[in-house]
Length: 110
Image 1 (cartoon, rainbow, N blue to C red):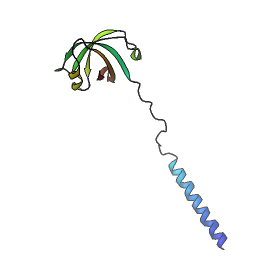
Image 2: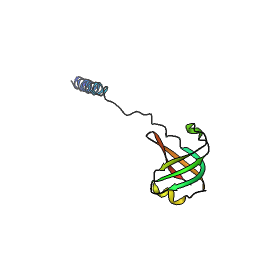
Image 3: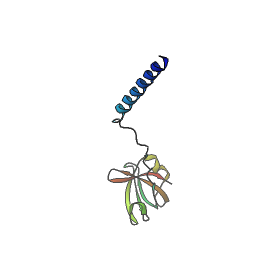
Image 4: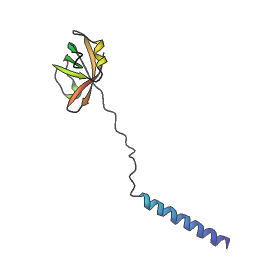
């Protein structure tokens, strides 16, 4: 009798386990694939002018291969206005860009 009871209990446990597994088959599980971090977009250039009121800087930059840009002079917004405190016209700088909608903004400048 003990063996029969044990067998019945085990069968019920296994059936309950299968029911739970079936219930979970449609659940969305988080992907184990993590998005690769975006490669930093960096550039080198010369500061043409700084506009603290507009949080922007005009740079004459070298080609930026990561985004297929040729060398040119252009205005960039900065993510943090304080970045402009350490730059002035004529400075040779290294900078980091980040995509912001259809534009790129400077996130770091040294």
